[in-house]
Image (cartoon, rainbow, N blue to C red; front, side, top):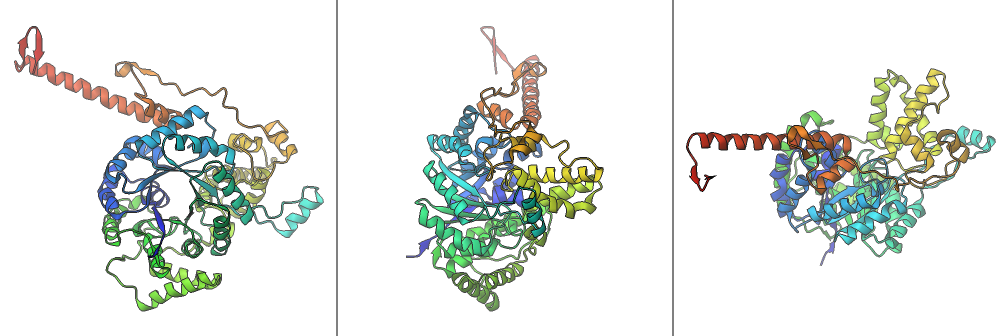
Length: 550
C-alpha cells in the first residue's frame, strides 16, 4: 500500500487572492463546487484571508453566505479551511475574547472544519484564544508558524552598529526558532502545524532541514504552505515530500504559479514518482481546470500575468520523455540534497508548464512580492520611484528597529509603509522617524504582541513615549455601534449576530454593505405591500370576517 500525502486545495481562497485580487463572485464559485466535491481533496481553503472583506467591498456579497453555500455543496467530502490572524482576526488591533469566541463559533457552525491560525509576530500567546474557541466549537486548530529570514546587513552596517554600541543581532530565524514555535503551539493545543511561507522564501535546503526537525519533535501532522514568487515553491514542496511532510498546499493548474502556490498537477506527478497516494480524482481535476480557465479569462482585468499554464490532463496525458526525465532527476536531486541541481530541474519543469519566471527582485530582497509592489506604488504616487533602491535598503533597519517582525500580513505592510516614510523624510531633510504611522508606533510599543527580538527601550521611548513593552489592553473595548435606520423603517443596521461580527471586524466595509442590504430589503417589502394593495383594489381578494385573504 502506498503512503498517503494529504492535499489542501487553495484555489478558492489563496489561489484567487494571489492571482486575481479575490474577485471570484458567487456565480463563478458555484460553477466549480460540484466538481470540487467529486475531486476529493483532503481539505479546501475557501474563506478567511481577504475573502470576507473583498466579497463585501467589491462584489456586494455576504461572506457568511459564501461560506454556507460552499459547505452546502462540499458537505463532509473535504474539510473546509479558513485563515485568521489569531487575536487580530482580520484587522490590526487585538480583539477581546468575546469577539474571538463569536467569530470562531460562527465560522465553525457555518462550515469551517479547520481554522488556520497565525500571528504576524509568531507570538503564541496571541493564538491561544483562537485555538481554544475553535476546538470548543468542534473545529480543528491548524496553527501556522510564519516563516521569515534574517535581514541582510552589509559588513559596513555591522561595523557602524558595533561602534555605536548597538551591535546588530546574529542569526535569529534558524531552524530551531521555527521548531520551538511549533512545539509551543502543539503544547497550546494545535491539531496540526503549517509552515506558512507567503513570500515563498523557504528554499529547498531549508525545507530539507526543517521538516525532519519538526517530525522529530512533533506528534501532529505538518503542512507546507509556500508560493512560487521567487522560484523556490516547486522545489521546496518536493523536498518537503521527500522528507515526510504530511500535507502539501496546492492550487489547480490554471490558478497556479507566479505569486500563487504550486499546481496540484505538478505535486501529484512528484507524488507518483515517490509512491505517495493523494486520493484526488485526477480526471475530475481536469474538468475543474476547464471551468477555471474560463473563470480566469473572465477575470482578465485583475490578472497581472495573463500567462496561462500549459493544459495537462493527469488522467490521460503523458509527459514528453525529456520532461518526465526532469521529474526523475528532480526527485534524485532532492533525495541527495543536491540543491542547485534540484532548482535547475524544477525551474525547467516550471518553464514547460509556462510558469512566470522567478521574481529575482523578491528573491534578492527577501520580502513578499505584495509588499514590494505596494512600496513601489507608494513611491510612484509620491514621484519618488527613483529612490526605490534606497527604500529596499532601508527595510532591514526599519524592521530591526521594530524588533524583527516576520514580514507577513499585516507587519509587512506596516514595515513597508514606514520604510517609504523614512526615505521620504530623509529627502525632505527632516528626521527619518518624523511622523511615524500609528501602526508602526503600536508595533514598537508592544500592542501587537511580543516581537522576536526586544525593541530598544530608548527607541520605544522616542517613538511611543514609553520605555517598557506595553501590551494592548482590551478591557476598555467598545463594540461597534449598531444604529437604527429610520429611513428603512427603523430596523437595525446589523440584523443578527453574524452581521454584528461583520461590523466589528470590517466596520468601514460592512457598514455600507449592510446598509445596502437593509435598503434592498426595505424596497422589496414596499414593493410587496404595493402589489398586495393593487390586487385588493382590483377585487382579487375575498373578504372573510373583515380580513383579506388571497
